[in-house]
Amino acid sequence: MNWIISELFYPDEVSTAQILTDVALHKINKGQVSVICGPIGYESSYNIQNKELDSRITIHRIALPDLNKNKIFERILRLLILTFKMSWKILVKVKKNDNVLLTTNPTFLIISIALLKKVKKFNLEILVHDVFPENLVPAGLIEKTSTKYKLLSKLYNNSFKCADRLIVLGEDMKELMLKKISPGNSKIDIIPNWADNDIYPVSNFNISEYLQIDVADKIVFGFAGNLGRVQGVLEFIELFIEAQNPNCVLIIIGDGALKSDIQNKIQGEKVNNIFYLGAKPRKEQNLFLNACNIGLITLLEGMKGLGVPSKTYNLMAAGKPLFYIGDNDSEIDLYVKKYNCGWSFSWNEKESIISFLKNISLNDLKSISEKGINSGLAAEANYKKEKVLKLF
Image 1: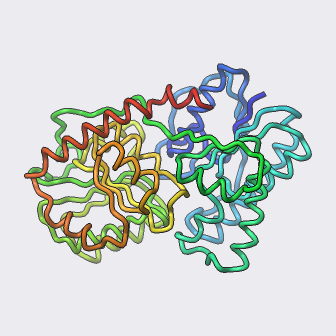
Image 2: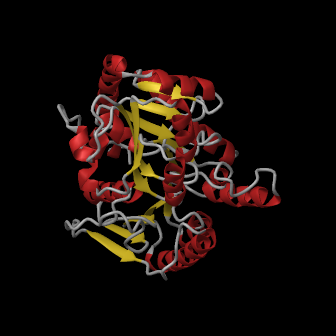
Image 3: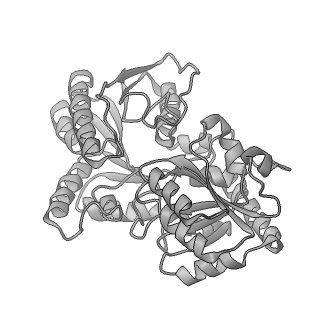
């Protein structure tokens, strides 16, 4: 039996749910697939898919009380309850020698599943989308020098070591995981996320008409995705405002813990070239990804090796150049340099970022287009769904 264990799964439309659903649909070619997952509706503002899932996939869904995941205390309580219930389901349902693929969400389950593996003797692969507890540091939730961090590191490192295989998203994450599990016998493989098949460049697209905002004769930066604590969207807004370039517009689409902070920042600054449009349904993804000239990806300093936003691959498939701010030599920084598909800065290059934003204009459209073409070619050659899924 093949098991997939994830807080997020079909019919939710958030990226992790879609990725794990694609993996499940791929794995049914190798035998029956069962899924243990959390309740439907992880992000209430996102639509829920209504198409039928393959009948060969059995879903065991965990019920939870109504808790707000964007409030720290309620989020921790939610994770504890979810971990306990999912652990019990694993103990009861999973058999010896079954194949289990676990994601790093819910985070506490990484610890409990290491114990369950010793009891049940199943084969364990962990798909590492987030690295704990390291990712809590840039989020400002823990100090790296604290006793709590050292204790969590020991717990998580020992838990990761129990896996038969770790699947990471890039070279930077592999380097970090090697340090975490050394010495250890876990196999580490790089499998990047992928671009959806229904994402492609749309020629002669009327961005103003789709957005219902007049962006004619403007350079449009588009951010679409999770508005979380480590994404750095608020920090970018400050730089964008400081640049004061009337030729540029910033469009923000998505939901997350900092949604209200972002809305308040835009309203408080009374700027007329930054627009927050809320969340959009997945069925519109090809439209809102094409509704910009440049795709924005930001990650706070210290996020190297801790994650790769899945929107990266869809932006590339849409033929959009990437404007990245984050750590040097992180995965997206390497993509930008390897494929010549955009621009990359670190957060300590503040003056260079502002200078770029201040001076970009319609005269740069040719260069923007060329980098966008490179982006699309790289996605086609390296990040097609069918090609990547064969690595699972």
